[in-house]
Image 1 (cartoon, each protein chain N blue to C red):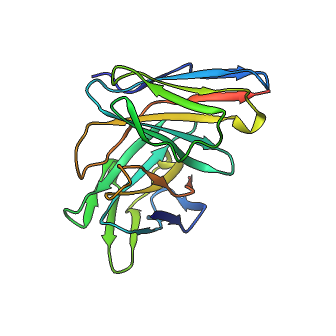
Image 2: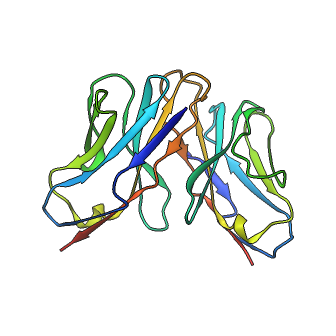
Length: 115
Length: 115
């Protein structure tokens, strides 16, 4: 079946512009996560959704970052007034609500470059 | 709280020789542990997972890992390296409690395989 998809695959933007990154999780997966992979910082957790609510936003690096999820499916990560340090690969992952089995299915990522 | 330490940032082996990638973890709760692999410009792929069943876990492509609670380790091994194993490997921990399955990644180990 279809895996996790993300769009766009690559995004180049000018400093100060806003960007939106999209994630389509696997159908039926209620949990959704955003991570960021950047040089020098490795892979970092950003935010977690269970359904449409976000019980854990602790990884969002600043108030320029926000995310929402609608219909328990698609999620959008928005970065306002982008800065060069926002350049990274943004990864989305999903999993079914299964206690004790936290295998997450990752999308291919969106590579964001801020010039 | 949970954390992961990958003890080697780079490992270099010759084709046909054994591979050992070391990982230590800490977790306040019973952990689930994973190894993911990322080939250049590719997404994250799950190699294997430990979720409190057998302590010796077999994964794809001949990799295996042993969960040792007394040593808080989850080292990844393969008897004979292949050129296609060259990639970056991530040891990952998650646990129950309030982590909601949030993954915490190690810093990664880059595996180089020489002919």
